[in-house]
Length: 309
Image 1 (cartoon, helix red, strand yellow):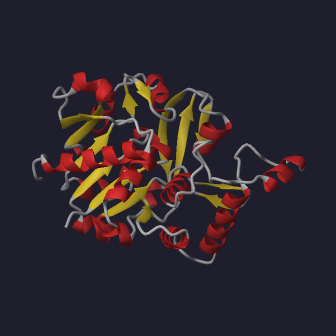
Image 2 (cartoon, rainbow, N blue to C red; image 1 turned 60 degrees about the vertical axis):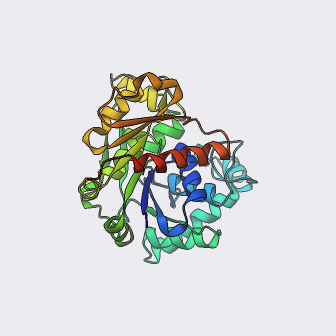
Image 3 (cartoon, one colour; image 1 turned 135 degrees about the horizontal axis):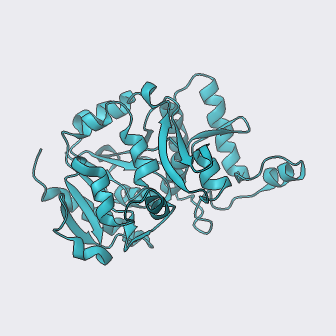
């Protein structure tokens, strides 16, 4: 039986994750989610990437906004703004209920893995997603004006500061969860979804033991850069500021020897056969559900032609 581990961040990764979930039964795929973006806001534990995947797999995601929950209301936020409270991170009423529940469960002693499973089950999700670890890890963005928390960079400041690097605060104390470790022992292949390599995927790969576990497995990645542009988020902008080419080839180089295969979009077909990992060319821009399923199937088919490690 195949056992596919999918590494994902937020919106871009969640699109491919949905495609994989439509093809693979729950016992054949595990989604491991970046938690470096997590933060505490007004006393609440917020897990943006976990919540994005949760709402996506539960068919509750707000496709108009591109984030958050469909059918959201904003009564609490409106009242908060009237009181002069912090409103730069927009929490809707339904979203707020999830954060209240998560925070209460964590304070009662549950792990993030346990709470995530409880929430996804309540929302009717049969597939399993796990945080990259249960210990708090925080992505710190190094900008010209100094280090800053990721959500301050990403949401509050709208990615405006020029970045010079990143680090993951708390990563040395992070551990692979028992659920993730058990799945890795049976895993037959790894898909790195088209999430930001620097702040989403690198955070997952930095968890002690993760790279060693992946080194014995076939690993493929889908490029989040298509035709020199990021499909979603600040990836291309970050690459330019880090003074590396904003190209699919550079993404493959960033992952280096970890990769056995790299999925290119049709716009980058000229790179096919020119990179160190094996490559395949397909449509990677996911607009419709059919696109998501098609890319997921291309990834699964790609594994069949890769040499065994």
